[in-house]
Image (cartoon, rainbow, N blue to C red; front, side):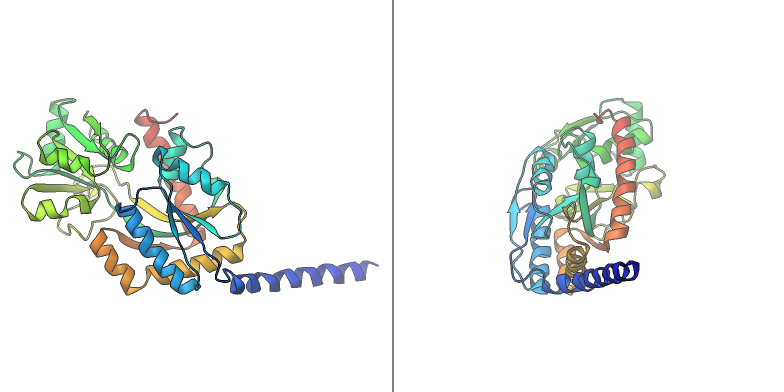
Length: 319
């Protein structure tokens, strides 16, 4: 009896092992894979997501339609995804916002409620001032802010946004106090050009043309690496400030999605990110292709989440 039972167990295990590769090969069977994007159509995030979706569709042989589900800084999109079947046909264009939404109290669950397929890109926030301003270096601006508490108004993309957190973290690290000014999409740069704020933290593409025109000056990158849009601009960390906050973007799926399906999606993402077309899009749109497989991506998110919790606590943004 024991031997018979053991044979059955071994046979079932072998069948399951064979079924996993078979599932990976059959998925997605031409069925659409819906990608939720939490920002509006035409935004940099949306354009990048559509570039990824187009490449994934070619590799998978199935359409990857993008659906914009905006609201609550991304919470609406994450809530939608968490309610979908874990079958690989619902994916989300995720980012650090999974953590900022949770720690600010807008999302009832954290990153552990999802499965994370692969990192796709890194975006590096930049701080800029008007070219006509007296500040030629980041140190000059920070020192002025230290000597004049709350006098330096720094625009960002909204309360608890990545650009808000990065800006305040920079000045806090130097013991300087600023006035943070939240704006809707694209308005921080407009208000900086209009002399209504002293500085702005945005992603590089918001500044590139204005720097070329001689209207703005970028003083530092607030991520961990230099940005190809401004190759001569050092990171804030390289200039002596303890800040390095990359914005990562990637693909996540509902908890419980089969590993074989995740592996298939991961392969499609890797091939897309490594393609010449995607790399060229990065130079045009303003992101750095930064593929990372599921296991490493999940560990990175865990470390990033822990760091953001501390930063948001220090900034009074953690609920």
